[in-house]
Amino acid sequence: MECTVSWTGGSGARSGMGFLAETGSGHTLMMDGAPDAAKPENGGQNLAPRPMETVLAGTGGCTAYDVVLILKRGRHDVQGCSVKLTSERAEADPKIFTKIHMHFTVTGKDLPAVAVERAIAMSHDKYCSASIMLAKMADITTSFEVVPA
Image (cartoon, rainbow, N blue to C red):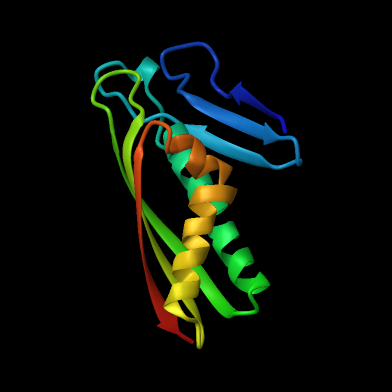
C-alpha cells in the first residue's frame, strides 16, 4: 500500500495548509488545516477535512466494512450500517487520540443483536487493522443498535 501526499500551497502569507493525497489505488483525497486567525500563514482555509479527521473516518470505514462483511458471510440480511465515531485527543503535542467511541447503527431484516455484537467484536479483535492500531494508544469503546428493515 502506498500514498503520496503533496502540499497544495505556494509561497506567500495566504499559501494555506492544504494537501492532496494520491493513493496507490488511484484515488485522491483533499485535506486542510484549521484556520489560524493569529498566524494565517500557519493555518488552513477550512476547505477539506483535517488530517486527523481522515484518520478517524478511515477507522470508521475499516470497521464498518468488517461488520457488513461478517454479517453477510453469516447470511444475515444486513441492509445498512453506519458508525458514528466520537473522540478525545491529548491536550499537548503530539495530540494523539486518547479515547474513541464507536456507535454502530445496523439495519436489517430479522437481524439478531447477538450477531451484530459478534461482528463488531470480531472487527475490533481480529480484522480492523486501523482500530487495532489505534487501540494501542486510545481507549476504544463500542455500542450499537439494530434497526429493523
